[in-house]
Length: 138
View 1 (tube, rainbow, N blue to C red):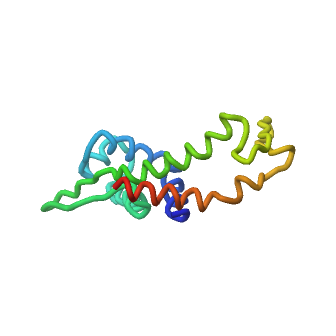
View 2 (cartoon, one colour):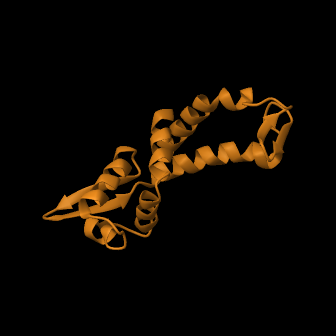
């Protein structure tokens, strides 16, 4: 689950792939339709789609000569759930273990310590639990 999440965020780090995802959330589109607004060749668009498919954000099907792409909402929900879990302590100002969270221009610290333990530990467990919940929700 953690590796898949890394792949999703890596894929979304690219502005072209984000543009493709933004288009696909409005509905399915052919590769040709996806490539029209992009200033790149069709093979380059296909490479971006392969990255999005490999991480599970997009699926495609071929009917005749037309390849149609669809968004996979489950991968988006998993990324959103992970962000929500990470955002809550920052918004609340206090992590679940009660340690004080300090936000500064230099970064986020717990009681002045860099790389807080509560962020380093439990993330994989949280993601596994979120993944199990998403699988149950179907």
